[in-house]
Length: 298
Ligand SMILES: Cc1cc2nc3c(=O)[nH]c(=O)nc-3n(C[C@H](O)[C@H](O)[C@H](O)COP(=O)(O)OP(=O)(O)OC[C@H]3O[C@@H](n4cnc5c(N)ncnc54)[C@H](O)[C@@H]3O)c2cc1C
Image (cartoon, rainbow, N blue to C red; front, side, top):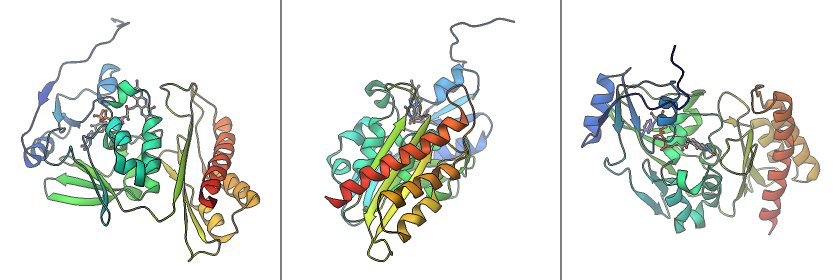
């Protein structure tokens, strides 16, 4: 057996379709052999490491609308699939209306990587550790999917089925993710714990988005999404419910953080133990909720 100390990419054919229809048709005709790709920062690494061996890589970066980043005060934000994370961070519209999304992108690896990496690639890779997924879920993201049957919309809330598994079928291409206008007066935070501060995947990630909501007993609504502690990005629904029912205060925040920790089902792996991760979910959730609560009171 040959051991490659410096593994290289296996051979593949590069396909550059001219239209979405052509791309979907090609992908549907080669369900086990073809894969779409954007920045390639997940795909190429997984190919190099032998986890993926596609015969065809279908470049979907230059297809209709995939490079658009548009904000409309009524419709909200549409982020084309090919828009890289540095463009998201630099967008004045994102900075003004969706700062949580910019904050999450900023915590992905390095500037260099973010010139390639996309939010849609992060979503489609469906890693429970994906740093931008929590913000996308908290902001009620909806995917625009082009398949052999045409275009459809798919809420992110029901998209993830397991690590690397989504509702996408052969031929499906995500062309964009869109977000409604965020609730008035909202504030958010993303806290990421990694083994180092540079370029590491999260051991635990906690996204919190809070907003005034006069219809709730507490008069505030919180969204809490956890990364790296379950097979899919996890919405801590019971913790959210406590903060909808009870007055927001250090005690209810602590209770919510404890419930978030109990909802998490992390695994032991080389990067951290399950027990440590559970404790960190509690601590980071409490910190993120406290930070957001302070912002909401300003
Ligand atoms: C050094 C390094 C550091 C990293 N650090 C982080 C980090 O800190 N945080 C983090 O979250 N991630 C990190 N990653 C992972 C990766 O960079 C991100 O997940 C990135 O967002 C993927 O985007 P991409 O455009 O490169 O996706 P790609 O690699 O192009 O695609 C990702 C997956 O989505 C599928 N896909 C791509 N486009 C589409 C489409 N339009 N429709 C349907 N399916 C599609 C592909 O087939 C593939 O399975 C890191 C990767 C590297 C190499």
